[in-house]
Length: 223
Image (cartoon, rainbow, N blue to C red; front, side, top):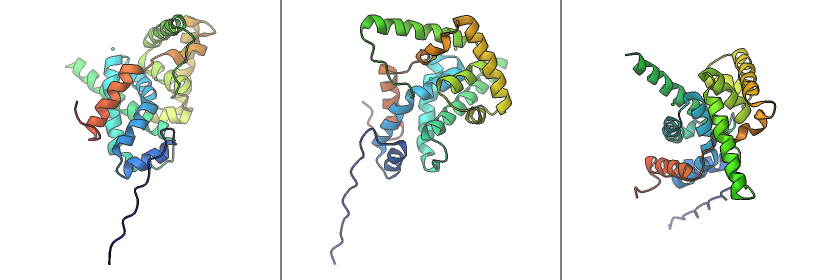
């Protein structure tokens, strides 16, 4: 008797919800993982950048975090949003990197869509604002910076932030209050309105991470 072959399931659109794309990747379409990477790259970078205080190190952590997310993808149960799940992975990778860095020294955030500025001058102004905010965030102690970025920039709730950082909810509230106070003193009352401009991660940076992650998981050839 001739066996019947089932038709291939067509890929969903690139704007499909995260769980659908996750399911496609788990069924063997590794290239679809690029959609998730592009969709949440900036979020991952901001989380790692907040913990580490160093852009280059944060970019490296993001790549490792995405590979870890891919290898653990079958463990994603949907109990939390995929964005929250991968953010936790990025934070844990960044904290582990910071601990290793501290040991060595003992023996330096979408999901906000890209702004469509009206003209190059406006884009330049937004870029300058983002850089200034980044400097003020970098000036905060590590614990305060991580909390304010996770809560106010990535919009995790108190419990999610506590879980990511391995601290109590009360500690999150105390640190957030202190961080907001410091930013308010440095930037004035309107500082929080511009917070979403800090730690941007797009363009060539995002493309580089997508390429390297797809190569690492065997979904693309080395070019």
